[in-house]
Each structure stands twice: as C-alpha cells, then as structure tokens.
Length: 301
Image (tube, rainbow, N blue to C red; front, side, top):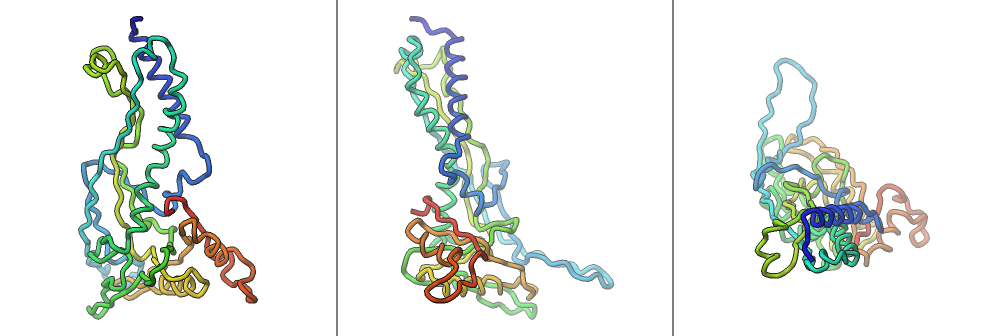
C-alpha cells in the first residue's frame, strides 16, 4: 500500500503528541531533582566561558569616592555536547496503520528526555572529589585558595574526608548553585528523514523519528557545597554546616552561606532523615530538626 504524505504527517504529529505526554509526566517526582542543585544557564554558542568572581561583592557604605573593586575572574569553560535517541518505525506499520505499539516507547522517550539533566548533574556532583572546579582545585577539596584583605592567602576546605558513601550539604538559595546545567538546545521530537525521498526509507523500509539536544554541566561555586565520606551523623553534619557558614570572601567578610539541603544516595536516606526530621536522636532532643531538608535521590544510587 502506498504511503501518502498526509499519512506520514499524521504519524509524526501523533508521535510528537505522545512524546510530549511522556515529557510532561511527573511520575515519582524525581524528574526535576536536578533543578534543586543546579543553575540552568542558557548557551548561545558551542561553548561558554564562565567568569566566576572569586569575590562575591558586598554592598558597603558610600563614603567619598566609590570603592572600585577589582573583580578577579577565573576562566572556566563548559563545552556543549550533543545527545540523541532514535526510534525506527517500519514503513509497513505506517501503511497498515498499525502504530499503537509505538506509543509506549515514544512516551518513554519523552520521559527520558525530561529526566536527562539528572543523568548529568548528579554524577558530576558525586565526582567532585576528583574533578576540578573553576579555581583549579578539586571541587571538594581541602585547599581552596581564598585571599585575605592583607593580600595573603588562606586555604579553605569543603571536604570532610572519609572513606564511606558520599553525602553532600548544599546551600541552594544562591543564584549560582553548586552545579551549572548549560542548555544550548532543548530536546525536541522530530522526523529525522525526508519521509518521501530518504535513502534510509528506500534501503531499510523504515521511517526515523527521534530527539536530540545540546547541553552539558560544570561546577558552580564550591562555597555552596560541602562533600563528606564520613559517617552521616548529627555531629558530622553540624560540623560541615558550621564550616560552610564560616566561609568568607576575598574581602574577609562573610558571604552568607546557609546550608539548607542534605543530598544523599538512597542507602543513606534513613541516616539523613534522622538528622533533618527526627525529634530525638538516641536519648537527646534533635536541635537540628527542620533546619535542613533531605533529598534522597535515585540519581546517586
């Protein structure tokens, strides 16, 4: 049976609608976990250079001439990568109008596109003990250089050490979050062939549909994240929190870090919720109850 252009257009329109249905599904609620820990930054070229300021400038009293702060920028480049997924539909199925079986994989493709940023953001966070950030140090490191007002340099840590499963204490209230998700081209469903003239259709008797997008991830400000492989206890979380709240900028003034999110793999969820949610730990009142929230994410499993 001859496949008409109107049939092909109807197939594309129908599959795209199903793809969008899958993309919009909320499911278990973990689809957008990445948005809590990452800044979504638009991209207009194949790569973007981020001049993260070493000093998050504070407002000061205006006395006399303006104080011209020397903004020291650190070069940090994020190159976009191209990602795709393809669905092959036999031409005979189109001709016979037997396309219902393709609704499920197309809808799944939509959901896969929705959750995809998680597959980049959380592995990058977990790799922060061995991957470098904008200052040239490991993102979770004991030796981040911070200038003092007198011109000297202090070495500041956001790594608690340890050898166990990693957990992360974050301040996600800042504009620049621990991770940057750079979005060049959002995922979009499309026909990948000229439906009437494609060599692929001629040789393979298939029509190709799929999605592609361009994006990548990189690290944001190390001051907004604290990594630990120590046991997840109230004492260790409290120590990490105190360290973060003590961070200062290059001018020697506090930069206002207040951790609000404890991010853990599923295996540490119960330990984390004891710290953030329990009324009592052992025989003692949990004075940290409600101070932070726990995110136990499957993307760190």
